[in-house]
Length: 367
Ligand code: IPM
Ligand code: MG
Image 1 (spheres, rainbow, N blue to C red):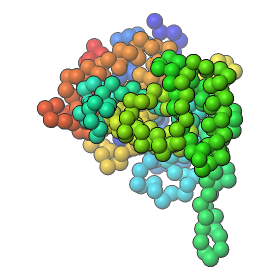
Image 2 (image 1 turned 30 degrees about the vertical axis):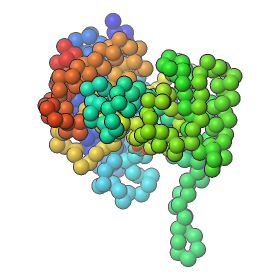
Image 3 (image 1 turned 135 degrees about the vertical axis):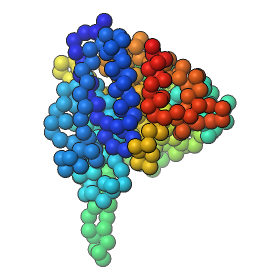
Image 4 (image 1 turned 180 degrees about the vertical axis):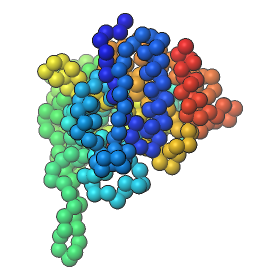
């Protein structure tokens, strides 16, 4: 079944990252043992963990390993300890370097409400049951990376903070194409979000997305929505959406919001995919949508499901193992059906379990 060794690099990072990636490693080991895969697992430091040891958020060595791997499983980065560091030395810069330099421009964030968890959502069950949204977020452009940027002194001893929101035709088309292609395999519906009422880059975004649709994706139903309206509509009637297409910053915000509709930020996986290189290979990084959650780190109470489902996305998108990905999703669903809950999704009558219990239960359901 397995072809030649595929390299998986684990970058647990900070906060709850090591716990949730630790449970995911157990799952990868299970696939090696029980499904005769020969995933070659390596693990290294990123973010604060790398700063503590090497004085920088990612070393060249780790970057080259990342470049050379078939899939990266990333945990989380950052924490209060690093709040006062100079910007270029912050833990998050490690992740930004990977996204930018591996050209991981397409960030897929599915928000799916598990049947078992409709009651964990802050919205009424009828609004979220059966919810299945895919957010396609542009990940290597926009205000996260635009120049000029910085903090500069101005007159009167005051300072000025500058960031630039910028997109080119090529960047917009590249991500819109991903959204259209994915929508074609779903409900053929894309909602593109921008603020074309106040931003020129938003006008360009809207025009280029529409032009691409008119030219190449006639069958797709495309709607344009202001990003603030989209935030509101996600709470009012989330099931109106199929694929949501957005830039880097709006996508960051809308995906946290969509995640919470499903009950917990602890459930949402994501995939960051690059363009094919000259050898036909696509770089990819998989990470939970949640952050490092320093307040609960080290307590064995975090929810490993988002990271385990991120590995499931890796099986599907990077390792060519769609069936195995389905198997893993089923094992997660079954574990929730069995009533097991980490504290973030706990509800009356269910069994409260730890991070490692949840991982073990998923593995026993794989068996
Ligand atoms: C995310 C995170 C990151 C982002 C942080 C950790 C830099 O919030 O992946 O959504 O803003 O992109
Ligand atoms: Mg975010």
